[in-house]
Amino acid sequence: MSARICASSSPGEIRIAVTLDGLMQEFALWRPDMPDGVGDIYRARVSAHAPALGGTFVTLPGQEQAGFLPDSEGLGPLTQGQTVLVTITRSAQGGKGVRLGARNLPPDLPGGADPRLLRRGPTPLERLAARYPDAPIVIDDAAIATLLPASLHPRLSRASSAFDSDLRAQADALEEAAVPLPGGMSASITPTPALVAIDMDGGTATSMDRRPKQTAQFAANRDALPDLMRQLRLRNLSGAIVVDVAGLAIRKRRALGDTIETVLRDDPLRPRFLGFTALGLAEIVRPRVHPPLHELFHSREGRMLHALRGQMQAYRGMPPNGQPVRLACGHAIMQMMQDHPAWAEDFMRLTGRVLAPVADTALPAHGWRFEP
Image 1 (cartoon, rainbow, N blue to C red):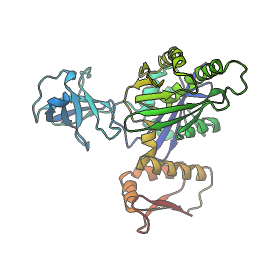
Image 2 (cartoon, helix red, strand yellow):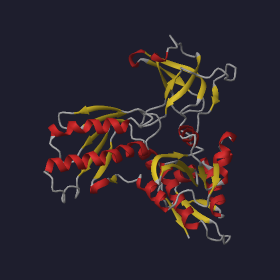
Image 3 (cartoon, rainbow, N blue to C red):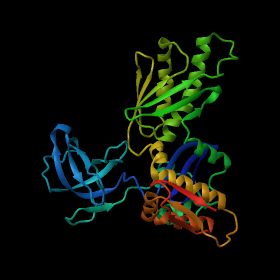
């Protein structure tokens, strides 16, 4: 079995999937003009020490929010106005700013004293290419190659579409809260501000099983859990996660712990299985590093990029007729399109048609519509 990395381009976004025999094992969204910042290295200025929080707020050049540097990073007492070298170890997510670190920074950073961005972190495609060093990389847009280091170019090959219909369906399914699982089971995933709640449903999984009910339910849950744990990784669900398995008596659920622990070992973020609560809920903690997919999908930018991808797919392959694709915009969407001119440039390159955003005062601030 060999892995393959597929990178499919759409306006403002590149969807990346790692497949093994056609089954998606990893997924990432790469928005080149909106990087999440993880791995970026800054020379930054201390704004305030917060002893009660066990750390220091540091102002990053060009960032809207100050980052938080824990005292455990070992820089010692810091004073307001002092400059320090820091790297982003966790992106802004869940309404919280970036987390910073100060360990293991490379020695060859540029000199100087003024706060500035010194080095960008790796892109999502670079991270996955490093994790799968022998995997070929299939792209469907030559512009992707210009965003990658030359060291990856020998691994690139070009296809008319990097995602076939099956892989596209797997990627689209990641936007849904309901997840089909093996054996006729399913799960519903509900992110909340405090945790991610997952409810497994047996459905018809045990209806034809002649074994005793609890034996059949145990086997059905055991066989479905590996695929559910794969969904945690694909969707980048993180923080506190609780799973309510289907049908089993609470006392019998603990025997599923070995299955959960075994599957989680393959996750590069090394999540921890904490056991089952008194209510029989499996507790998992998965480190927060990059934003979870549901935050990226449901952000204002994410909804707009989804719409642009749909329009791209409708027009791609059709001969241009010289007519622009008009996008009527409320004032906030018009501002967003002006802030991200690369989106319209991508649309033109990928479809051969001009995307023409037009302000429409009749629309709400965050409203839009495509006009024929």
